[in-house]
Length: 377
Image (cartoon, rainbow, N blue to C red; front, top):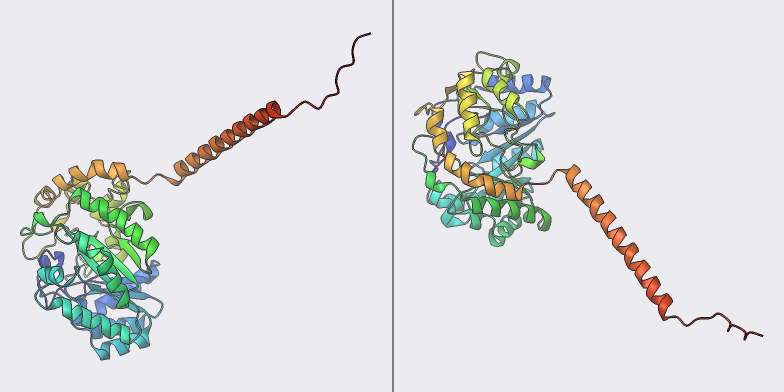
């Protein structure tokens, strides 16, 4: 959820920028959402924005009030100071992911001149206080290779990062740039590279799209995740700005039963290939159907976007990704087990045949030990 839509940066392609910068969820509302969530079994809460640390006093207060929950925030890092780090040390239930787009040039390209250095300083401060943190990176056409390079990842690890969230660029908003969308080849590269990083480096890396196989497709729409923006609109996903209800008018449970959430649940998974999990990026025609069927309205306050306009920007990317995703499609465990059994059986049969052949060859080569036949009388 977004405590505020306010932000001290103006990043290129930021989905949050479409909400405007004048909205806030009160402390009382944030607290109510958490209390309702706990009744439903929810104990993990993520703060996004805007820049959530604009409301850091209220966030720290929430963390103190709900020690049975874990809290997490995506932050640009510019508001992390020593006093804040000391408060995090006392809490123990709040972690950060610093938004960074690669090296200095890539980060400052999207986030503004000087931002990279401020992020690095915040990381150094967190490390000095021995706090748990990681980084978040949006990969797009112009930074994909850089943001997962050994040089960059190893530097993040050295600065104290222990996890990484990777998000591919999504063209949300009427002014969104479609040239930033990754190519199918880059997305396939990321799929393989994230697995490689997890296997070879002391960093837990996650890809919000390409790790769909571990969550059985899209987790949004209340399946395992939902989003509430700073105005209170309850959305199926932080990247899907459509809603039927506002949390100021309904309970959290009622919001989970709203038409667009039910449309999600009736259709999930959106594709039988877990590498095509998203209704916007991978299956745009399904998103159109759900929004129209549910009567959900655009929640972009700055410039409401019709769902047909939104999905028109991703249809070509979805079409090009489909055959590549099919080649990469993870095999179900049952199929893997069956194949392993076939392989074992085949190997056993081959070994038995080879052993039989070797025995026959040895028998032919060994001289006879039978006594000579006596001469006939």
